[in-house]
Image 1 (tube, helix red, strand yellow):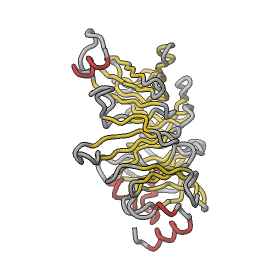
Image 2 (cartoon, helix red, strand yellow):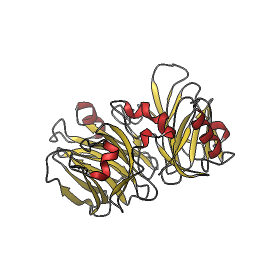
Image 3 (tube, rainbow, N blue to C red):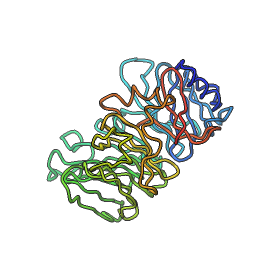
Image 4 (tube, helix red, strand yellow):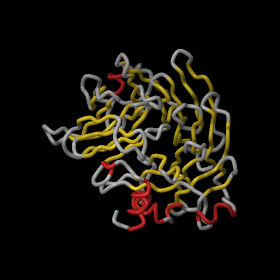
Amino acid sequence: MTMPGLLLLALLAAPPPAIGGAASVAVEAGSGRVAIARASRIAVYEGFTASAPTATFDAPDGPLDLLEFRGGKLIYRFVMPETKAESFACVLAEDGRELVVFPNDGIGAAFPTAGARLTVDGKGLYQNLTLEAGSRAELGIPGDVPDGAGVIATYRFAGEKVAARFSEDFDAGRALAAGDLLITLRRGGLLRYRAGEGVTWRLDGDRPGPWRILDVDPAGRVAVVLEGAAALVGRAVADGVELWRLDLGAPGSAWDAVTSGRPLSVVDGRLLRDGRVLVLGRARPFLTVWDPARGVPVGGDLLQREEYLPMRERILAEDATLAGVGEVVTERGPALLLGARHGVAPAPLP
């Protein structure tokens, strides 16, 4: 971006030298460490203001997108240089070892594919699937489970172990670890499944509409759940207890400045390190910070701020999410890092 305000902000924040120009960036959930892919190299910085990387790795030539950084593992998407035809993904450990590249016939054709992501602890992969003939045969799912059932497949790096949990009731899951899952139900509701224990707790929805897990903190303590069109709720991972709730009915005066008086509609959310929640909404496209302790939005609509202009195009897209947005610490305090092909700008959090 060439806007003077954004250039000045980037200079004040003193980002790593390699962050300028065409780059792909991922922020490690929880730690604020920054990985930057540029010119066939991946560099990891201890923080956004670090002047030198703590580690660098070779990367495939050509376009490379960093997808996630969790638990010291990086997952990135690339095109195989030899064929330049198919898009692959790779998981890289902190010591530079490639843990797995996929699609990978040695593991399976149905899983992992492009939809696979790192478990919350970074020690494996998981993916949500819909049961059909191919995934049934590959994952060894019994014939009495009907096609169309929900499946959460996992791959643990240690021991290279693949597992699958499945049910007609399952909608989608988020893997805290390869054997520890939060799973939403098709009729609304949420459960936790742990290998060796089974279902440790279950909540059934009391209103129509699917539930969605938007985020889980890196320590696996709090999950942000969009419960149909009724509420955005923080739930304790340990037992499902409600920790806070944002009702999505009449927003009230505190939300009018954010939504321009329109109904409050939330499509995505991310936990910040201080317990607040970054909320992406669709009354009209808006981005704000929800403070559960005070029960109010903070900072108004961030998309109206000059520092957030690089994000507007992404947020205005119909399928926009908060994927790829990370929290870092700059010399001016906590900020969001907004990745872009032509450089990266930090935007201060309210």
